[in-house]
Length: 608
Image 1 (cartoon, rainbow, N blue to C red):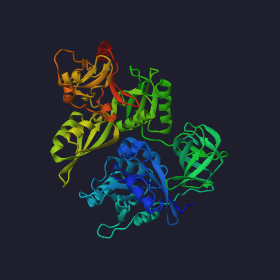
Image 2 (image 1 turned 30 degrees about the horizontal axis):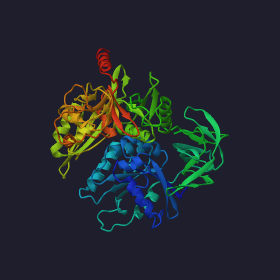
Image 3 (image 1 turned 135 degrees about the vertical axis):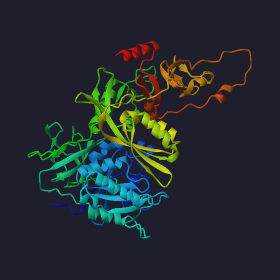
């Protein structure tokens, strides 16, 4: 049996190719908003962090009406670090809309998403966006998409996908570039209805609901978002909650919602293919399923690719601990991290030998940085260590994660980029010159080699380069890879920095602090211009004399500090250093604040 009036589709693409913008245009043209209604841009990006960074982090869903049909649309993240969001989203839909920038063509995340969709045998509708760009090359980009599908082993039916061309910012669309006439998005809606199959579940069969997300609501409690695979789910109905470990418990649906536009609408029942929000089911977890209490038939639990990177999260034991954050204890930190792991399958948390530290495993630096920033904004205060890759032992051989990295750069920067990635054990796989004077290089690089590389890449390419990468496989250990070649400037006492001291110490390196900043013993205040660490006093004041001097001379000559973002700070630290995160600031510090303890730890690492 089929729900012929329903379609479920996910919009997938590489980061910044225009997914969320296209959803905006689809919502407007479907009549969800009034003509005089004020709606912010990228309405599907609901988190503050998503708006600030201009990327989608959490998969969000909406529903639109087109003629007599309902289309459930899921907007997915485009960055490889949030691949777990994409993987769980693909279990909710019957097809994908693959969006590709007409100038850039398919990039690494596009390959990752297409591979997952082909494994699930999902049909695709290909949309080439940003046709209005001056450097758009839609025919070449389409050829690359065909090559990608064939390379991934797609069947003939999967390769014969429909193609549309859009300018998402203007809500315009065409099926043929040769004809000059562009219309609104009606051809796109028609293609979705014609090409994406309706849900195939039987509304009278045993109930099966797959939970793909769990959100917290202050009034409703845990709200599970999922898709009804078969059967009919009713409000106030008794259901069997089937956990990932095979255990089961009976519960009931307190409230049932479906989606209309951006709103959750209370519903009495939902049939196969419907994306629903279920409130009040305590203990429900991501990837689990709901079924009939008398004849439970659980679905295969949701699974995602394993993490490739870990970071240590520990309590803040520095001198400023507890002065800026609301949640500072190890119990509060532990509860928050384990709660994150329950609601995000791409995150894993493990205990360590210390009661004050936990290891958090994830997909990459950006995913970790987003988690850290979310916790900071919630009022948590803690420290994080240097990112480490996860290794495996296979037949007595150590194996580490490798990534496919694509760089898009002007030709004049090709030499320095190839040299840098060569130092980091990168092997060039492919080179393609473009008419615009840019070149696209593909490398196979150990994940360790990419930690801390992004900021150097932007410096080397003067901000004109694009770097994207995604996990490929576990390969042989590549040997020693250089990380940071410079030492750190470390404060040797607590106090406030002075313009006089910073001016006197300028020749030692670049500073991260400015006059008036509070520092403490063991805090990193700058980057040394030599390989060794240097302890110094940035709080020294000018001795009073009888000689008169113009006030504020020092302030005029102190260069501005180098400001580090959270990602920059994570990339900067070494093994013996930490990033101190509070709601007010990021600080860098040594793991051992006293010089004697640092030397002792260094000797232990060298001998052990």
